[in-house]
Image 1: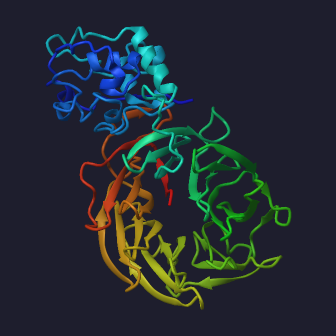
Image 2 (image 1 turned 90 degrees about the vertical axis):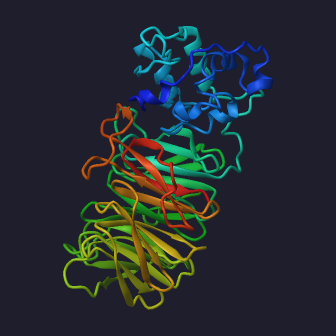
Image 3 (image 1 turned 135 degrees about the vertical axis):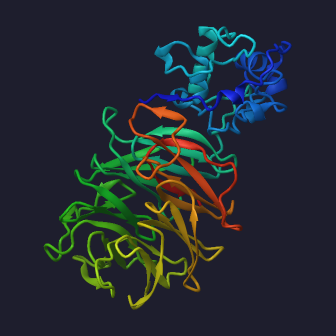
Length: 486
């Protein structure tokens, strides 16, 4: 549906290439792992001395094309080849000259520094060989694909401005799939929220515009179904502990709740869609949501107000009441998260610029911890006893020891950080930076026809609480939500 074009990473990255032709090796499978037709192109014209091979890749965008395995370590700008998605694989933009195949980018590869105006271009047949190979999943010579392993550790980023879901290989930390989501290929439907069910078998996506709720299987990222929950600004959702039901929140005013049976992907006949406005004129624009670990209570934040709403969902109709904030002014609670032990819950407040902590048993206010500017999303590291808060206008992540209820620091991570999640096994925190340009930010290398600026991803080392060096893969337009497959 979408084609990406890519601005030059830097001509200097390629200028040291020595224009030599590799000796032809007929057994490309044995030497490189590529199918012969692809290996012949990459090995003899790309992975040559001074260019994209292990010895000189650092002067060539850190991109090694000498083997099938090395290819999927990516380049300085991220994933050069995304299986099944040639239109989003930026390698293609550097080897094409035919605009019908995408937007050509300079320097055209293979690059000849001795005569850059007349590079040894790939033929149309060679370009189509690579395009067809990528669209077939970019297999090695034994038909093995990067995407084959159903037990692979993965994490996900939704791009709100481009209706794209990026699936990352957690070990290589490169994009291994790009999935077009939504229902209308001619409209940007703004995927807003992604979350795994508690059993970890499926992940789900809610959209701001199209009124649909979509389900995908975690093992192979297959689309499993969708349900129409009526047009609305569906922001967050929370699962019952058994993964059977999900409660979705409509940000519009008055607010609404949709309850979906996840096994059958249908609206719960008991609820259908009910206007959610227990106190007209007071509870408008609900946003964040969380279900208590015992499954009895649903908490919803009052985005533009000064309270939470707590519903007993163990019976029907559910009974509820407000939990008011003990703060002068308007707190504007945005999101809510329970601690791993379920003893307390945290609420980000964009109005009072803090995180408020409540006792989960009594709903009593316990403490307030200042954050950076405009706190939004939260995630928890159970192993490190840390709470991470993205501050979208402050360009920082606030790091809090949730056991001692003390702030450790505000860490600058990038421009307009929003979605974030922890990979405990890799001891990393992933943060999606929207980089829309409203707070500065680096100009993107890649240009998308979706409109807007591409964002990027960063990672924080859970041990040092510093950014992981040399890790900033570019994403698509407005990366918004992150979810790690546990």
